[in-house]
Figure 1: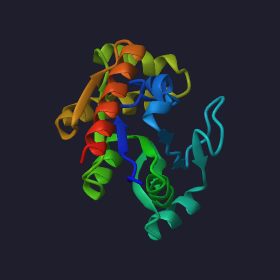
Figure 2: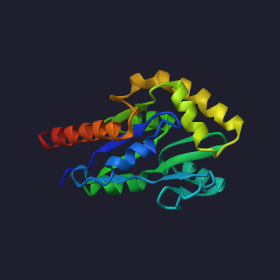
Figure 3: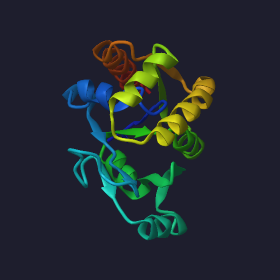
Length: 192
């Protein structure tokens, strides 16, 4: 059995990574499994522990860092986010294609550790649209919104570190493009 692919979906906060992912993640031909990240932030309305994230204490997260249990991690606006490495390896060894939806800082760490990863950067149609999306969440104070926007401007300058760039002007179209990218890479791996 061939080892599964590792697919990184990244981009600035508010670009619609989760929205786009929902259009293609369940398509059987992609053989995708979503890697659930670990975070110290509080759950947003409707988020489920173990599905959307593993919500853990700061102490638990720091212990995972110390024990080298994370493929990547980052701290943003006072919270940690990271990917448990054991789960990713187990799924890939089972032949599943693992999807990571992670921040830019984490994507760089994964690319260094897993050069075979397929990296896809989602960009917004404009910074104005990105701001509208972040504000539309109505889930954070103005200070955090400003931090997210400032970080997004810096992250958008790093698109050249990714193999593929997809604009999320229309989530369904963006998802279709990502689906095509993944299918093409599956085909390449099968023909090796």
